Length: 191
Image 1 (cartoon, helix red, strand yellow):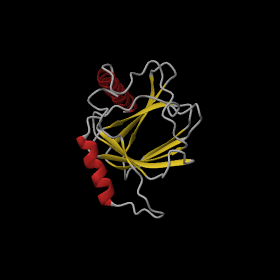
Image 2 (cartoon, one colour):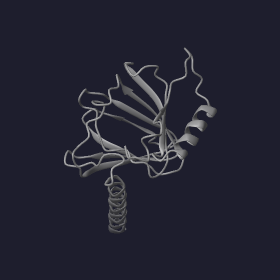
Image 3 (cartoon, helix red, strand yellow):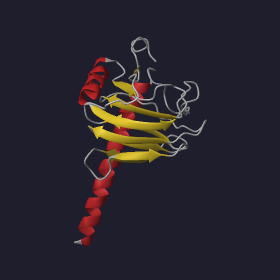
């Protein structure tokens, strides 16, 4: 983490109750915190311990937050993401860092979430302000082994992170433009 973000919390502790109502107030406060932190995202843990076998959490994201491309292979952990509000782009990478595919995730649409196998390098890009996701991942959490980060991906908070994110967005836009043009040509050929 960079110097300007290291003094900010990354998560809100789980409420201390056996039954936790998931409220608009809870997620509203979380979204507000994500707007205030230089990191532009904040977690609301629901699991009581980092040693829990299953981790459940809300993740509030703002456009411009950088989620380092990663996978959860050592130890092997599955991950499920459901978009509650906003808009999120899920990006899958090849082993060498090229964009393999991307999926637009939005609530109330055909595709509102993803389930990700442990071996898949991926990231998320918040496309709208106040994007809120619900994430479930295998535990336990160990900071040193939770994510396998490839050498081609800059670390969060590094000087290379922002240019990398901008280049990623540019590459995704170019891909979308090429796909749209190909679809137009295919449609014109059918007429």
